[in-house]
Amino acid sequence: MDMRIILSVILGFLVSAVAGKLLIPVLRALKAGQSIKEIGPTWHMTKQGTPTMGGLMFIIAVAVVLAAVGWKDLAAGRLGGLYTYVFALVFGAIGFLDDYMKVKKHENTGLTAGPKFLLQLAAAIVFTILLRNEGYLTPDLYIPFANVTFQIPWVVYMVFAAFVMVGTVNAVNITDGIDGLSSSVTVPVALFFALAASRWGRDDIGVLAAALVGGLLGFLIYNFHPAKVFMGDTGSLFMGGMVCGLAFALDMPLILILVGIIYIAETLSDIIQVAYFKATHGKRIFRMAPLHHHFEMGGWSEVKLVVVFTSVTVLFCVLAWLGILGRYPA
Image (cartoon, rainbow, N blue to C red):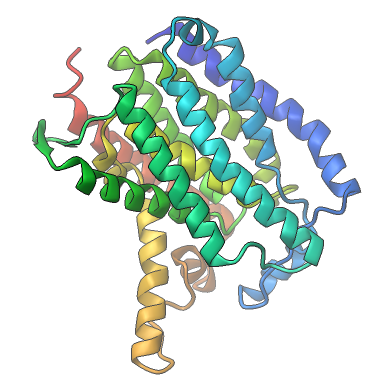
């Protein structure tokens, strides 16, 4: 493993941890508090006013690592890491605008769904074209375990990529519902991409993924239960952009099915609940959706949920690693 991967994790952690010390008092002073939805679990109302937009901590950390550790790649013209970071940053900016509107209006509604979707779709299309033109992406879908690729027409691939990117980003956003959950689940996902990139010799991508690992670990100091700060849509949309951006930058988007199993389960539970509720005129399959609320209503603590969901993700990341060994021979 490239020592820069380890250095990126350490530096990302330190920068994020220090940024939290400085940022949280500022957010409190600005009264940038989270508004809690009344339809959620009643005990979540005690979190009302907790500072939000804390995702800035790991966004800053990743930028610092990219500049300090990834400068060699940038100087050599290996810009995949930079492209992926900027792509995620666009989503983070959309989230920041959403958070700002929520804080300003003192309610849990920011950007409306239409403009948010169009902005995300535009970012996904531009990123896909950029990766294709720079040689990072092919219209050949890599099939894990089978170690084969399935070629599809570029136009079809564009539609597929846009759907997967926007879907992934919003799935990560849905997972951000209790203290430390989405950040804890994403740590092993980012670590998987860091190790895969390093094994493949794509250190520009590896440094970026490792920076996210460190940044999220630093953020968890303040976000683990009981949370002193929330990442907000600023952080969750950026994080979702990083997850899908890394998968596409490494030209293996289908691996998201495995490493993103919790994101998928959370999103499906929401879709199933809404569809069943409408079809049966008021009946529910889950106690509450998304899935983490179902288990919460069943008596699981937030800490137990984080541990179990993260453990499931680790297991599926190991499975994903076995699935790509044929593509990245030692």
